[in-house]
Amino acid sequence: MTRVAHVRVGPTTQFRTDVVLCRPPNNFFSATMISELASVWEELDRDDSTRVIVLSAEGKHFCAGADFSGGGTSDETEDLYAAAVRLFRTRKPIVAAIQGAAIGGGLGVALACDFRVASSSARLSANFARLGFHHGFGLSVTLPRLVGEQRAAELLMTGRRLDGDASLSIGLVDRCVPPDELLATAHELAREISGAAPLAVEAIRATLRGDLADRVSAATDLERREQMRLRVTRDFSEGIRASAERREPKFERN
Image (cartoon, rainbow, N blue to C red; front, side):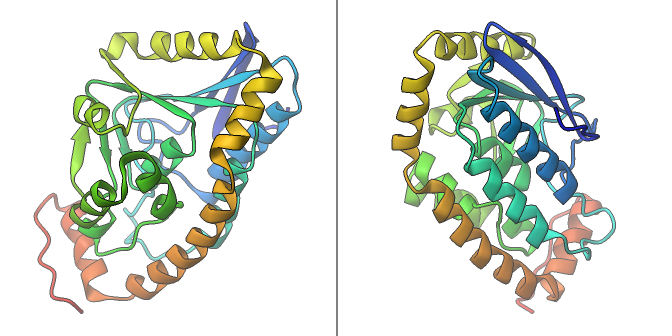
């Protein structure tokens, strides 16, 4: 198995392998982290003892997205989205166990998985517009695929935050359970999947996903261009400041 720093790989149990994001407490992602995750999933594709992957995270949050504490000026999105597309090209089914925040690109990571089990205290949001920014990580494709075009537009344009129950009610997650039942529920769903014929499961997954990876690749190209365009605006600077200061932003369309 590839040596990784931001992702921990557990032993395979009953054809299930646990993969854990380990940059607690927030698990902010980086191009390195997503590339490591893609490499792990690619290696597990070649491991016949693994039939299903459970993705979880150490710490308070599943993945709080990108770290904008430095002002949001660094640009590694080209490498980041290239790695993200690799996630969508893997073959094994993946169950995400979501605690705390799955925000922004962190939501994008969750939607790269096939199933999502959320804690009742989880918080899911595509908050990009609240930062004066364009969404990324292929959410242009993955979010409407789950909740429909109209609901996706509402979530993306408002940046609204949903708890686990509200996420379940619109189909954004597949299970909502008390926090102390989160991992056990994700493991039980994985056990059910691993009990089915593995070649059939992979074939069904490929048919259902179709050209999803190609569509995500095209979407991330456009998303990145829009992010670069908006990154230099005053509204983006205001959004980042307001988020850091925990206040309502005052956008001016410039």
